[in-house]
Length: 72
Image (cartoon, rainbow, N blue to C red):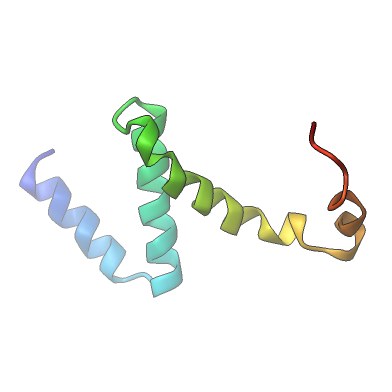
């Protein structure tokens, strides 16, 4: 990556609210994993990001019925 590109990315991220900057960071991790730039040991961070992103889907009254279903 060129210094110019890195500076442009940094300038754009600095303008974002903190919550959106965290999303950018998580997306970078996703891109690294998708393109083979992260190892399996880095999956914990990606799983945590997924959990946070999906919390509104999983934690709702309609979904509570599935909480006690055996997985095996």
